[in-house]
Image (cartoon, rainbow, N blue to C red; front, side):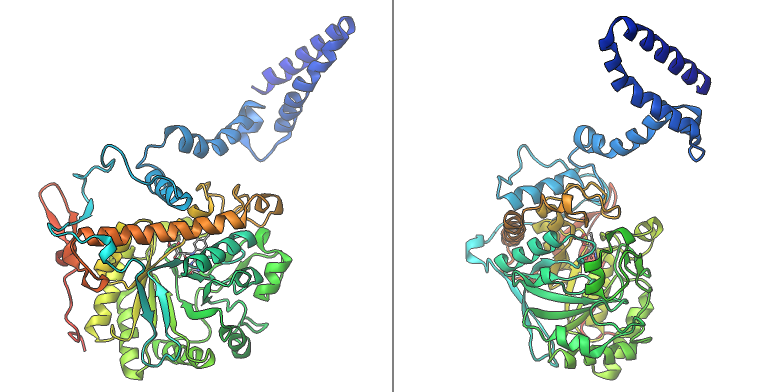
Length: 506
Ligand SMILES: Cc1cc2nc3c(=O)[nH]c(=O)nc-3n(C[C@H](O)[C@H](O)[C@H](O)COP(=O)(O)O)c2cc1C
């Protein structure tokens, strides 16, 4: 194709030059032909891409098509139940609820209810009208050592840092949290002025990089921690042990997103890639973790302190329970994130193939806490594709006390799942630090959408719970949810995840 291109380019150029001697307006055609020939010449000189070098111009089109492929798929081909990581049906319901648009569904379910793995809840012949139920349920987080327990919504904004997200996205999430009276987890990138501007409740997350409370060598700094943790707006502290999308891998802030301002907030070098270490330096075994929890609780003047993890090696979690028993120190809450969880940037192997999925991890954590008789002190929060009232109900059936949503909240902000969070080119101005993209994100409008999504989802959960005949969250049990195992077998969660008696392991 190289020779054909060279021949065609020479013949076309000569023909146009000759024609333009007779018809001067033909010169204008070079405005079209010129860039194509220039692209072909640059392809001929390209020594990195075989395809472009072998097939000038046509080879370059491949890269354009590759870029367009997900967009064409999303807009023209994708069915309601297609699309990953979040399918179109769930993206649409979040958009509808965020906008306050009609969110009922015509003509019946689009899910194949006979497929293996299909899950549903059993309804009651005596459903309860949602108006008779607590329409704004809350849960009190804080064990007996906590001086400032927090009354939390059952759905909150999951950890996403300023850095992964733009300043306006952070503002809109926090503004939404304020409007809807729920909490906003800062993510591991510390607390910025954008978290503070709207006054929404904060859960301050501390990762292995100790951003916002670190010494120059990256170790934990008590004074910096105390100063931030005692702020009125900070309601709880979450130590990040791991995250479902990349357990065993520290956070990644790509250099392109590490602006001067973000670097100052985190106390790191600007314009460099910031990889948090995979493990904490403030503790190195379960007993030390318990003492670290106590230290943070004391430094924060008795606020609830918990940790987030994606379940990995089960015996290690059991060791934590034993350390809680031996030290008498318990976290106030544990957040269980599923392997299906989202991220701004992670290696594919980590996203695809490490970490227990939410339902299995959540059941295991709740069972372990019950078995060691620790559950009474500790609330369990769940995250991992919790987007609808049923998802909340399912998490409660397994033993959760409250839920988090990250990508649901991003969708409420207007995320179109362009899958560009890691590239700094997010077209909706949410997961980017490019000002011209951020400019389009209207905080005043989006914070209302975040609050509406939260409110409608909680409403749908309460209505759903009423349909099952259950009148309080604590009465949602594993036997309420069914799963089709295969074409011959259906099991309840109670059969799949048999209940452990309180104190059974103690
Ligand atoms: C853009 C983005 C940034 C995230 N940043 C963090 C983080 O800083 N710390 C953390 O623990 N989890 C982080 N997560 C994970 C979420 O908090 C959450 O655990 C996970 O996405 C599962 O919830 P989801 O399915 O509702 O998204 C991030 C997720 C996304 C999408």
